[in-house]
Length: 258
Length: 257
Image (cartoon, helix red, strand yellow):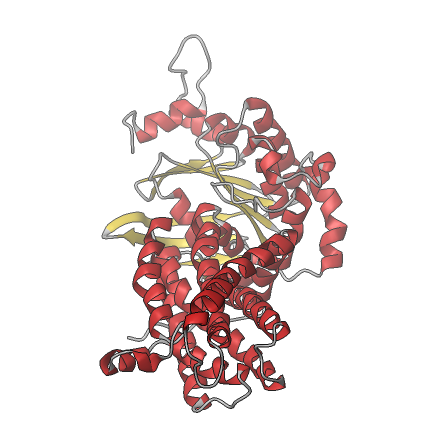
């Protein structure tokens, strides 16, 4: 039997607004914090390592890395939000239980969390895009199309993160997700170097990973080009989002609505 | 006795098992409008499970539940829209002030911001927290938090309140403040369903009691009627019989957890 698909309502927005109100209290430090880490990597590797490297596809290494950093940072923000912050709300503070005592379903709580994490991740991805645009690493207005792609990337990794949160007994559990999934993905999906540097077998694995689709969409747009297979990339990210969210809801129901 | 079809809560033959063990084993009871009904029982008797089923947060294995006329869990959301809940554990939002907690909670009911803002002063006043509107939750005492939980449960002006151990862990002064608040709500015509381990609380507050053990009802009636029925003569020459005598007689003296 296929478990029931999530039933969603606009009440999910009340959950979104709750998280937004918390964020707004600490918005500036949160935003700076979100920017600082990827920027340190971008400039450290971009200038330091970039000076040793040839141009990649006609662009300096730092421009190549900048586009990848937009994707990786979006992914990281969505993952941290749904894993660590989400787990605090779900388990430590029992916020989800409080919300479910009101006329809000568990499905709506997860939808609100997913949309929130995607929004926060989008802000972080967009902020990096703005910085690299100001530094001259963005080719032109085509890069504005990266914004919806960033949001889709955020949704996808938020939904994936919620699966882990829904089954997690404690914060320690998240280490597995980061070391076994997130970190390898950053190295396999063309954030730091082109995927064609990898052995053919590994390359074919990479094409199954969500971050690869995100990079395939966003990097050309930053470089002022159209992505080669946009429908494939969008379709893959959307499919992973929907299926992951469904799995997360089913697992959360098992945890809460026993 | 056939339950009044308009009763705020009707539970019939509720059964709920966890991993093969029955938590609730065929519970039936009904709430009368305007009364305070106490659900008593040792730890693990099935009280919290019963409340979770009644709110549509756990799916019963069998039995039927109607909360405020709505079949639960099918229309649990609609029923919860007119219910106020104080859970056993504090789950106020630690990132917010007292007033923000009420505002954000009101939004979960789909209430317009203007409606919630208009209600907040009265709710804080009810909780005795008028001067703490902008206090962080972390700065509130246990009793204040509990009172704020109660105020939060009233943000939607509910017909029915469901309270799971509303005064556990509070000092006698704080408990009495909560009791006063609950009596006020009863006087306003609200219906209350509560669980408690405090027999004095049950005796003072509840019109009727349902005593549960091993997921079954073993006795029900008004506190006075139960004491008179079980102890026509006090077990002690030094004091009159009380509800605790009845509870221990019915559920035994062994520890349950």
